[in-house]
Image (tube, one colour):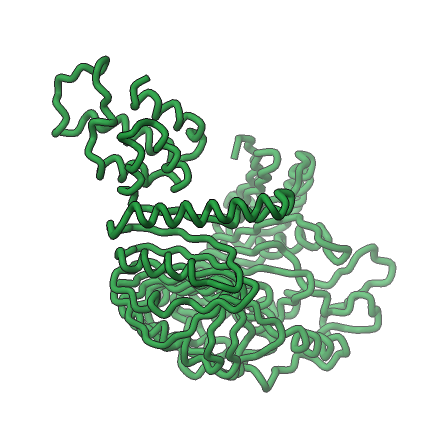
Length: 552
């Protein structure tokens, strides 16, 4: 059997993987290359094996290293072609399955080490493009460090490193001195430690750090690393426990995208600063800090904010409300300066926890003059006390999105003697449900709203006994009756039943008035792939109802 036929037979087991399909497509297209003779006897020639070694190595780079190594059995010509592969994917974590048994795992780990050593020896000093190395190591990391130093010497451009170790594992300092790295991703466990000494990464554009820590607890090491990457455009920090709670500073004039998602639960930083004047995207999830002395985000376009209070701060804040003492601003933390720093964004996402931070940790909500798209996550334990002031300070907002329509029961629904803000009864004797409406008493934030499009994701979602479908329908009705510039309302209904759409549509038909005669309402259910549309017309003060059914 010719090599080309045998190669396709071997690779046929991997065609379900996209990059292997790419391999076959590339191999088949090579007959179009100019340096291959136009007249060729395909019945007697082995087209693939006639290609130069470097080109076959490039094609094999579309495969995982393990699969590429399998091609060595095709013929003597293919035995060492893996030496020309420029992308390496090395992973010994797949051998840590408990069902394998200890003896089997140790054997496979040894085989893996021998394979990598032979591969490194075979490839010599050939240039590398991308290396992905996932390893579980013991107390001696010298072998893994030797592999890392070797790929750095060979000028690797993209390094993806995952280390799981029971003992402390410090990142080799040579990694932070690479002259060729463009993308670096390091991940592991909290035993994976980055000890920043000298930093010289002149080509690095993307840096990902996942579940690692820094040896220096002052925060200076982290700041030194970020500021020392002069070409850095994207920084991602995920699942990290800050070893330093005194201060945190992100300073880099070239940075375009920044993601910080920490896992601290009950510790508050003294200060957090951002000096990133060219940043256009920010995703920030962390415990709210005591202060934000510098927030330089002049170019910011989009932000996703998930700042939150500690569990103790949340309890104390809600407890004062529950005991009828009202909403008391905390004195130990303050998010105002951070919000002022992001106030020029055009697109903003706020988590339900961030909405609560606005209530208890923000002296004044700034004006978001450029904001046109706002998404708010809602929660049954978080009220909307800060929402009116937030929306009043978004004078140019066009699209408002709610993730769910839940709001906290701070009105004391079960206390029939309590009156919320002296305007709303929390409980009406004989009523079969709560009649609290958090928007009553402050209608101006809706009656002057510039919002043109209102979207509700997870409409109809019931999370506990506090949730009520009637509450959600009432709230949508109130929006339609009050918001004068609404042109479209889209409700993504969380229901598997066709009849539920009919019921909700009938509810909207009962409206006596609408604030905007241009308003169109869509009720969409992904589960049954049907939409129901309600239009208003200028011929009547009520909503004229037209229903269309079509796949969504």
